[in-house]
Image (tube, rainbow, N blue to C red):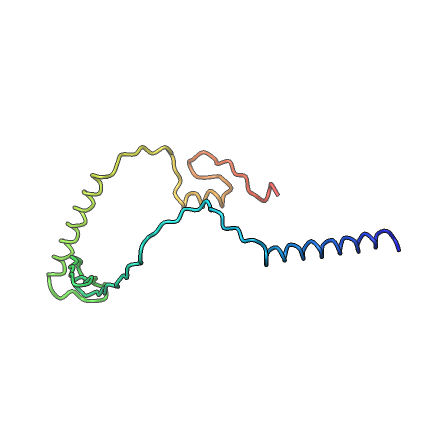
Length: 150
């Protein structure tokens, strides 16, 4: 026999003996019951949570026994004819509410200074991409297509 086959046989027998010892230790060996480093928190018995019914209506919604009303005007589609002058009055009221909400939001906004003096819109940038950086009445953009680098 060659020395290679002898080595394979000895190695196989050594593995079989090693794994047999490990399996026997796992099955019949002393179990480790030492103190672990884990923290255990007692949360008590879990509380049962009850679901709450939520229903929606034209004027608002109900959560459980409490009723909430919303102040939203109904949406009028352009296809429906306006038969009374109340609809135009409602639109004026909505425009007034919108103006008040806009003013309130603008009070909370902070002033910002734009840092790009000559920003491109999406349409202008698309046209510049198509024209490879050449735009009307603006400095030419440096354009490096990805195909050139591949």
